[in-house]
Image 1 (cartoon, rainbow, N blue to C red):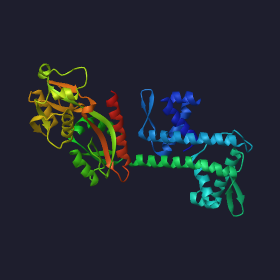
Image 2: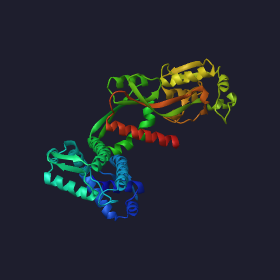
Image 3: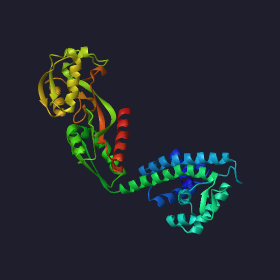
Image 4: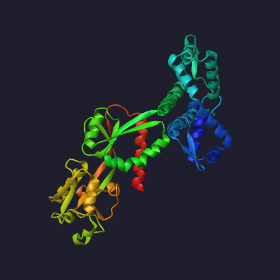
Length: 403
């Protein structure tokens, strides 16, 4: 891969079209297309897909663009330094770097000998010597000083190579990321999620993920949050998506968003309960409900823990007339007039709508909220397939929140 290819790829991403990149770079669109296609063939990846007139980066393309912009920043700083160095026959001359050149130069630095470097690189010594000669002519000064026993860096060469190491490391990281994507053409993700949360989230995520990575198989394990964490600690699943309750020492958590709870009552009780409509309910508002019958999910379920916290903060002892493991059963019992309850906003329209129900938001002081989190083992790194799934999850939740 070379600097020119990276510039073309990043320009297409910036302008979102081949024609836009052409205007931005002052190059013929067919030239840009040909250069990018050659790079795709070299790396065995496709960087863009067409969506109407737009060029949308593929996941592989996003990785190349992310690393490519960092590489271009390195080259820009390097060019500024070369121009300010004030030495050589060609001050201000712009050199377009290639990945091979950087690797070759750093190998010569490592072995301090062109012959030894050529052996390690599997490159003919005359070819390596010629590359170095042409580069030094382009730079206008020597990078290495030749001696009887090998070479040593010139003052210019020492600083040049120090700066090239960062770009070389970025090229290496780019290669590793692309190799991971190649491995994703086949593979399996195994993760856990509570049943209701899975019903709410997964139909929005899995079809998009399957479109992007059709070769990845997905295995889902449903359980409560405590059980899922136990499965993950036992390495039976890679990660789990759950509602956060309390930290575990072996687990790393990433919070996504907060899902507020609502007071849910039978719609035909609105006039008799006379709750405020234009503001969130406070502790004082809920205190008026102390004699009302409550329908709750079973004890120790995460949803119940949040509901218990709400009534505790409101200073009431609820008259619980019925408990069930099913959130949907709770909702339908409330609609049938059995009692009142607390439910998270995301679940109000999960299996059925809110027909026959009236829903009231709660003041933040009541702590009526649960946090959606991803839990991963603290030790070790998730496979690329899992990281891409979680990246899509983050995008989806952001869209849901902003929408």
